[in-house]
Length: 117
Image (tube, rainbow, N blue to C red):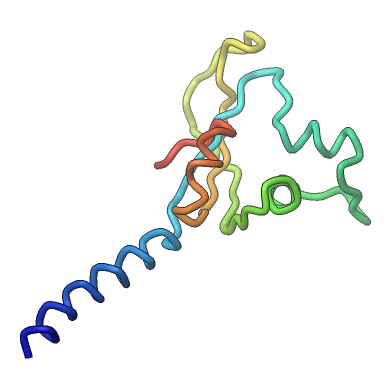
């Protein structure tokens, strides 16, 4: 009986840790003025071809799927509504991109300048 009582919390801990690594978290990417994003560079270099011009969301999903094997969902371009300057490579754009990603992939996303929100 004691073995069962000790085993149950351990199993619950293992199960919860496994679920946490696959839980979806929201991250954002904030582009700089005049700077090409990694997915825009990849597309321009012919890394992928579409039948028609892709939306930002389609391109971002394709880029991370093909280059990093990361599945993104709910990719959106969000207008921040903040006033911005227009100096190249100094100022942020008036928008950012948000996406849901598995928690286990967040480190790879952070290396690509995405941050958790």
